[in-house]
Image (tube, rainbow, N blue to C red):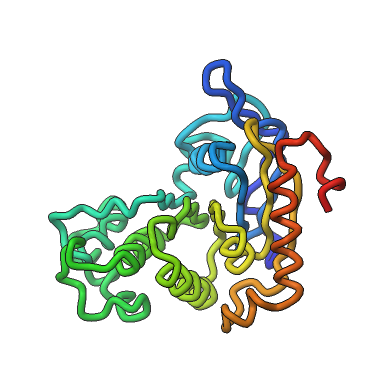
Length: 263
């Protein structure tokens, strides 16, 4: 943890959809300023975990706190949630989409635009303030969506497969861009992704979840989180070894073996 402040704490967290168990006895800790990657098989409960963290759902059992608050309203107030789809409003400009979070906090349209516009250059969006979403590339749309999430000034960012819809080249470019953005403006982040390489590159730590009901079957420390040279980082022997360990954990995630047996 980069700081002593604990931003997220989950103890024996459980969740059910009706009688269907989705999360089982899950423990997590995240310090302020840390980036946590979450990977696991499709349908294992990764998105449900984010929804619980953000106060969009309540746990069935166990405890969950964000910034010291255990209530759904308190968690929601401390989290900014970026879903898989960018959800940009097609009738608004890029600038007005990016400033929505500020408008929702009660700022005037003029002030919200001013604050969001200050970040457009840093996000590689300078000159596209007036563009509608249909006029932007997939990568640019994701940048607008992330800017909207960032300007909310919530202490925890919850990112759910932010680059899943992008092609491989654009996805790699966006990973490098997000790494730079997080280093320039450090935030506490929970990143859910199917891409083990993406998780290891962007995160300080990565937890591997089992098939449903989700539980932690392994945890890895990234060998080079947010390295300046992505290509060199992901081909380094330590990174390759960490990726293979995570893949091995994923392959055994439904076997019922304890985490230690997967290492």
